[in-house]
Length: 273
Ligand SMILES: [Mg+2]
Image (cartoon, rainbow, N blue to C red; front, side, top):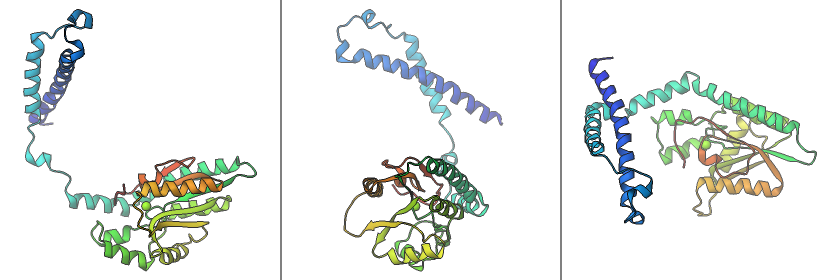
């Protein structure tokens, strides 16, 4: 490490410790200035008045923090977009993505197998999957447009019905069916415009043996993705299903309950809140 970096690291360490001391002192000051304490002798507060040394510490800490924070403009740049894209490409094309998915799928398989082994005779078990980047991969399309989202291109991609299955998830899907679980697909793809092409895509990829495909209704409702998906799971619960596992690539697939276990898949391509 260069002497400059050493000095900067030292200043950061010292500065942060002193800043903590200053924060504690500031907290004491704030307490003492609280109207509740006006007129209350300091001794009754069980605290001591600030020593002038604390003021000096505050000044010194502020100077050190300012000095340590004086990084070069280059160091404050966010991650370069081309660098980030290259990292995502490496993640997918090195096999790291599929290995990460396979690890999640293995955990889910163990969980579903154990749950199914102890099911009550009358219990109706269900497994819920999201579709996009959970069962079907959109990486080929998103990579082809240089990443991002272009609505007309996305619609054309969905209409082609050529999204490939994510293999470890297809195996999990088939295993759940083999164990007698009903499989429900809850997706933000729109009904009716995307239904036929999505069904065809799923069949083509060996994912046609599901119980029901639950899509986003084209009824103008402004529910969030999370609320809509939660409502769909709640409806399954009211039908008498126990949702053993809910699997998705977005937190919004998984929030809201109505599942015995959630499994989050990696997705560095986009974020759906
Ligand atoms: Mg998804």
